Image (cartoon, rainbow, N blue to C red; front, side, top):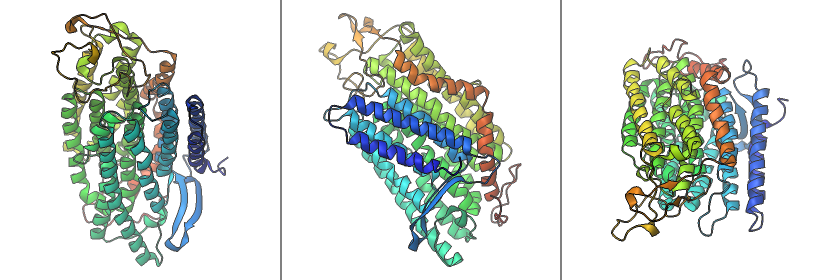
Length: 558
């Protein structure tokens, strides 16, 4: 089974599916949705089969495929996965069908079609798979930049009122980081050429180089900046709240659930193994950014009235925990960080979806426009509560295991940073539970639609959706009671229908199952994490050589 090109198939299938869907004639949106959903399910099956074929006790990179691409420059189309990349493929395989099903009835902006939307989603899926499975640094860079294109069009063509601004900001930030990384990639090629006699971009060859510590720092910073923007870490984060707020709900789920993980994945895959001395020397500065991000983003989330922006800020805080776990240089903390990457995608994806379903019913993203929803839609409120509790890492939910591992693994080596980070847990409880309490409980109230508003009322908030359901999942609009004073007007909210239950059920199940039994994921990622910690010179107990001390020989640690 392992001889089958599973990884190549996971790239080719959605590319072909995207092309077929895009080639459909106008008016065949229903067929486009069916083909896209079927394609994404095939990718999920391939991810599961690849996991079955993967041997946790085998070589570091498995299921490999390598074809010479640009031989004169040592570039190969080389694919392979370790446990870290494999769990991200599983996350992609789960989220994309969920997103497609959630977007089934979403209204499209003028002159835009569902056919085009799902075609971009499938192409995005292929690029996301490629960036996690590339074992050639140049190929990784190609996928890293290429995945910007479908996300740019998903935000800019199908998003909210300020979609063009958000899309351009996302693209420019990511492009700038990518160009800086390209300079570092070229520098790495030059170093490999001087040491090996020929340039190469192969990861296994590059990690054996003995790079001068000063050069390491420059190359590390080139990669780190690109990944810090993508993650994002504070102060490189400002594009995410705009993009998360304006993107369609389905695209926002993939943006915060998968695309942002490319940054933290890059820390583990490239920054630590290729530049171990620089990683150890600069780790305190990275940890400062991580802890500042946890606290600063949490405070900003507490002040948000826009639910989509609030969820986006929670993601920035969570990425601070992931960076803390990575740069604590212990196996336990780094394993927790990888689990956090997966669990954050599940929990925050579920929260974004349920927020989208609420927005689809009320036509507004503003917290103040909702109240008492639990009395009218108890199932929706129950799923909202599960998503909220998973986001704040309540014991029994999937996020708790990863957050606990990060903190307990980081404390022995980074006690001050760990203690400061725990304050973010308290703040998370505040901003998540306040949003839930204000929307789900209290006096029933609903959105006062613009055409019903008294003449003296102020204009609607500029960031509210102009069309009910325009950026939500489910596409249903609100139905208000007969004209009455605004203070007593209430919203008739229907509960989740069968399609919406099918959307949230897999994620709710994963939140609960992984909350009580995360061992399969831990066993899958631990060997890759141990190999990465060995690359950076960390012992199993987390101790590392002092700054400037040479890293132990890393050959043969695969």
